[in-house]
Structure formats: structure tokens, C-alpha cells
Length: 368
Ligand SMILES: CSCC[C@@H](NC(=O)CCC(=O)O)C(=O)O
Ligand SMILES: [Mg+2]
Image (cartoon, rainbow, N blue to C red):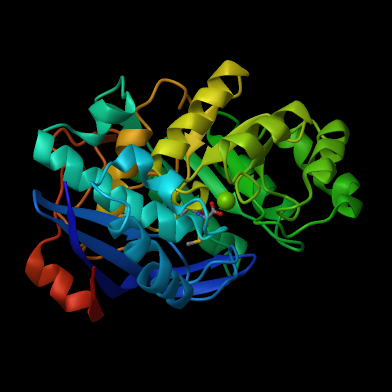
């Protein structure tokens, strides 16, 4: 398979409601799609960078630049395309995992479509549907939060994740427990908003029987998470800190995490995501699939990943309408709290051209 070129497609999708985390509020999802064109067909990749470097160091314009100037030309010059070699070919360029992940995903999708194999089959999926959790942003009030949580429970989501930050943590968790009871699967995500000095405060979440507390401390603070894990009973889960199979093994061995949130974009792609899954399974650490408000393109691939055997906890693989009134693919619709794993070749979905056109702000063709 030979790379002919890549189209960088900038999209801006309005969210059905503002999504507030400890690092800001999103009202639209501005992201980059890649249409990878080869001599044997096309593949699609989704770059999950934020417009600003506030979740991680990557951001949309930076990803487009590194793809345009370094990643795409280098891959094109490396000989016949082979998705399993993309990470090696791009390794000389440091970081930029989300940009690399999008390119690898597009190559893998093109390869699998040409061979008639699905992502699920390629990655080793063992389920044909996956249970879905939902991420609930920081709200203006406790009543507003309870309305949102009640709505998602009524829709059938099997796990609730609450975004927290200093000043919005114990009270919302207590209110959800008091309103919806102890049986609701409940977890929280701090997006690095706390420090080790908050350990005693975070221990106040222990009585609420949370599944986990996600990324309470900053990305680099592995030892801090290990120390925090000794001071609270809520299991610590890492997200931003998990960037590769290597860093996962180190975090587990240092006692920094009892659970891992795997996001293919954050770790450099679906093949590295599978390696992280394998490391976690080997260490008896449960994993779940995180989300970056993906369109149906990335959502399709995430659902396939979430069907691997080690994904034993519901992920942030919500239905399309959690974030979008209209997705750019056929929507993913919740069915009894689950999403069906796509079975078609590659990621199994395609953008609907007119829907993609509606949200496309600009495109750029990178010739090779
Ligand atoms: C776009 S930034 C969102 C990052 C956040 N993701 C979610 O909360 C889930 C989002 C989703 O459902 O896709 C996380 O840190 O886990
Ligand atoms: Mg997170």
C-alpha cells in the first residue's frame, strides 16, 4: 500500500450543552480529521487534540503543523505503508502522540478496509457490544447536576463519572449518592486539579464507595499519586499520566494507579492502546476506554477497543447524542446501556458527506 496524500479536515461541532471540566468549559468541539488516501483506498483518523494545550501539551494547530511538516512526509518517504510500522517510522519525532495516533489510525483503517477486516477483529475484541458510562461536567448548581445525572440514568448509562475540582467535589458526590443511592456505579475525574496537600480532603470521598478517582494530581506526579494512594481508600485511576505501555508499567509498579483510563489518542494510537491493555491485564489492573468527545469516527474505533477482554469497567464511550445533536457519521445510539461494536471493514463507519461538510471549517491537502 502506498500513501498518495492526506486531507486535514478541520471541524467545529456544537455541543448540545456546555461541558465544564477543571481546565475550562467547551461549547464546541474543534478537532482535526484525517482522510488518508492510498493506492488501495482511503482510511479515516481522528486527532483528539483540543484547540488549546489545556488537557495536554498538544493542540489542533500544532498537530496540523507537525503532521504537515514532519509526520506525513516522513511516513510517505518510508516505503510501503504498514500500520504496524507507523509508530517506529515516526519515533524520531518526540511527543505529538495525538497527531501520530490520528495518522496511524487512518493508515490502519485504510489497510483493514482494503483487507475487509474490522478494527474489532484486528485489536482482539471479544464482545459484540460494550457497556457505556457517561461523563458529567461541573455544573452551576447541585440541582442542575442531579437533573443531568437523573437524565443519563434514565437513558440507561451504567456508570456515572462526575468532573470535580476544588470547591466542587464532596458536595456533588454526596448529593448524587443521597438522590440515586449506593448502587449507582459512580466515579470522579479531577483532570489534575489537586495536589498531594489535598490528600486529607480527598479522603473525604472515601465513604461514598466510588469506583475510582481519576487523575487527581498533575500528569508528571507519579510518585505523588503513589503517596496519595496510601492515604485514601478510593482506587486511584490515571488518565493524563498514561502516555505509553512503558509509562503504564512504571506507574503500576510504583503503586500510582489501581485502574487505568486508556485513550488511544493520548498514547499514540490504537496499537499502543492495545499494548497498554496487555500490560494492565498482565498486572491484574482493570482498564476502561476514555473519551475525548470524539465524533463517530473516533467513537467507532473506541467502541472496538472497549470490547477487548481487559476492559472490564464501563468507559466514556457514550452515545453520539451525549455531545452532538447530529454526528458526522450514523449516530451511535445507546441500547440497554450498551453500544454495538462496528463489524464492517476498518472502523466500520464513514462520515456522511453532507453532514461532514456542514461542520467543516477548512481543509488542507498534504501532498506527498
Ligand atoms: C476533550 S477533554 C475531555 C477529557 C476528559 N474526557 C471525558 O470526561 C469524557 C469525554 C467523552 O465522553 O468523550 C477526561 O479527562 O477523561
Ligand atoms: Mg480524565
